[in-house]
Amino acid sequence: MYQELSAISGRSLVPCEVTKPSQAGAFARLVASQMDGATLRYSARQALLRQAEQTGIDRFEANLIIAAVVHRAAKCDAATESTDEQTELPPDRSCPPPWKLMILTAITTQAIIVAGAWFFFWR
Image (cartoon, rainbow, N blue to C red; front, side, top):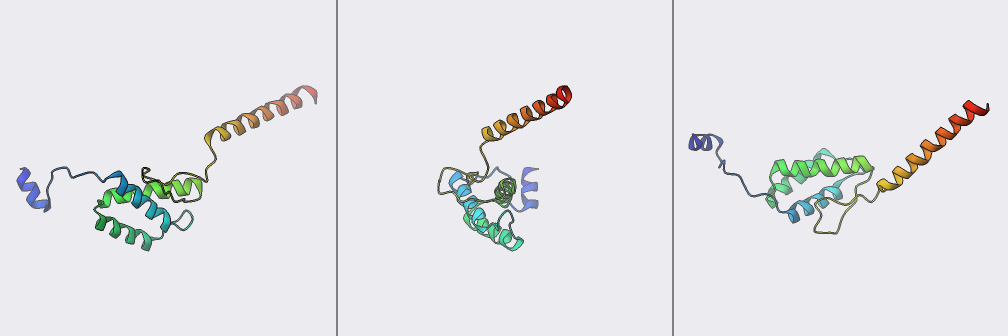
């Protein structure tokens, strides 16, 4: 059955080699450089998919990398480039650190509690 399925699909069904992190990181930086703010144009996406195929990155993996970079750019409203070869995606430099958001949330919550208590008891 394996041989029949392999003949039908025209390619081997043996699991293929996983893309190397350095290839994925380089491709992620290339995607980030092609971004227009938080948008990746369709023509740029098609060109990126062709370049990924030429470098040996599977189309599925290339789409995953593109989706991750676009998601990060949309989340932080900016795409940044990384010069670090060890990371797969450019680092978030436009997003505030999570601890700043927690402190801001705590201060805002306390202010609302104090304002509510003042309004309820002294007004």
